[in-house]
Length: 213
Ligand SMILES: O=C(CO)[C@@H](O)[C@H](O)COP(=O)(O)O
Ligand SMILES: [Fe+2]
Image 1 (tube, rainbow, N blue to C red):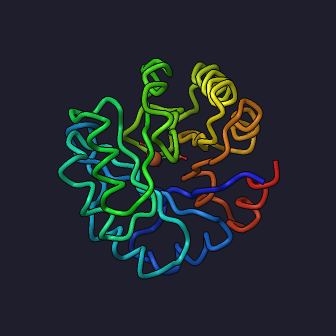
Image 2 (cartoon, rainbow, N blue to C red):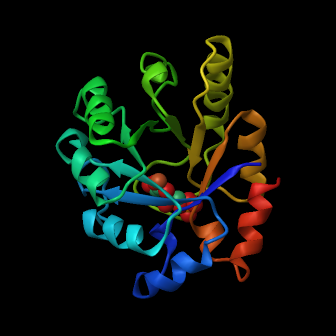
């Protein structure tokens, strides 16, 4: 069974309560934080993480698309993040960010953009709880899946197998039934889906169909 993490970037923020209820069948909730600097868009920050934390006991994976994750890591953990995911392309030293998230008491994930070679993750894989391979350019929901990211999923899965690492691989961006199946086949375990899930008339069915591809 795949882990599904609907991205609330595609939710109706005027009805956050209802929107979180709509995705109650999913195991995780994906929260996209954008600073208008690391990516050319601003989404939301700590107050939304705290608000969602109060609404659900689901696992919260917080995807930090920010230039300086180190100074914010602990605050996102305190706000209720179960996983803090930072970008390898951010300005901070990945090992320091990993340590900061762990010391604050959460699990830690590292993400790479579509243009970043997967080998960048190999160095830190043994200290991660999650690896995120972006399947669109970070910054916006509703984009089309970039098929040339799939070999990176396969390569990371092989790397994990060969090194006895049990780190879940997450994919994020342009995920629908077709692209989810391709990613799962390539070795992804955690599927983030924003527009596909929230635009569906039957959200529970959409989540279930991704779960059991
Ligand atoms: O991190 C991001 C975008 O930067 C994603 O989490 C999107 O929010 C996914 O949205 P869809 O592509 O599924 O609509
Ligand atoms: Fe995301």
